[in-house]
Length: 110
Image (cartoon, rainbow, N blue to C red):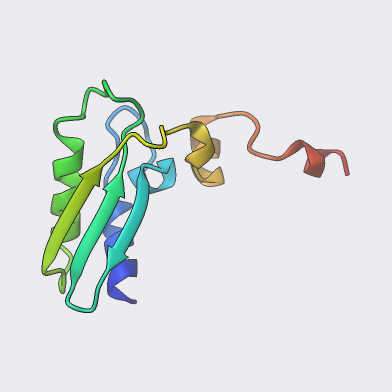
C-alpha cells in the first residue's frame, strides 16, 4: 500500500460526530497530496462554516495523517470554496445516511 493510500485509510477512520460516515466518504477531503519525502498536504472543508466541530475536526484530521508511519509533515488547509454539498458524498455514504437520489434516474428507467 502506498503512503497516500495509508493516509487515506487513516482519514477514513475519522468521523464527523454528527454523522455515522467517515469524513472521506462524506467528501470533506478535497485533496490529498503526498510527496516523496512523506510530506502530506490536505485540503478539506466542513459541512458548513458554522459546523459545531469546526474547532476540533481539522486538528483530528491532521493528527490522523501524522500518525501514519512514514509521514514526516502535514499541512492542512481548511476551505469553503467550493462549498460542500451532498453531491461530494460517495454512494456508500448516501446509502448509509438514507439520502435519496443515490441511483441516477437514467439507471432506474432501463
